[in-house]
Length: 127
Image 1 (spheres, rainbow, N blue to C red):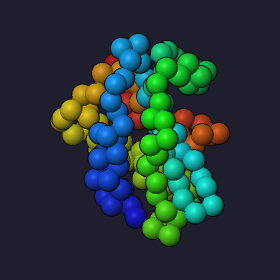
Image 2: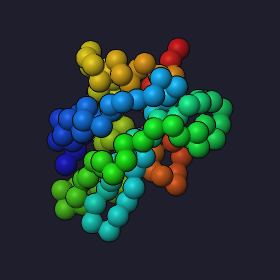
Image 3: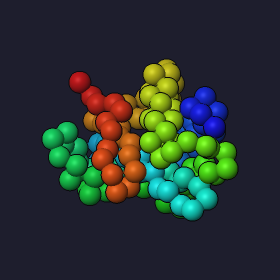
Image 4: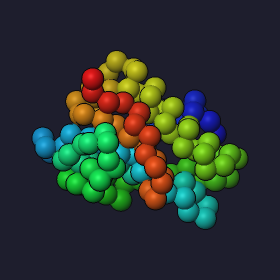
């Protein structure tokens, strides 16, 4: 499963869970988790953003709850870096597409992705 195979189901999932976002949400983090048999992704919204420090990720004011995007490891033969890249590329494709999802994500200061205990990659930042 590569970025192209992930894109449509990922887009559908983001569209389903990115609802009822508080007005105070200024950034989104797509968190990746590794389980024994799958990679999981959730979304958190934060009330602050500071490009110089990752502490802003602690100011969570919204999350996707139990609604996780699940990629079974049997469908993805790559290492953890490759799943990160596939999710990052899918996010970039969503943001580059004109539409409601891109508008919703870009109506923020930043969109980031990363493994829950790792470094974040800023995918999009307001100029």
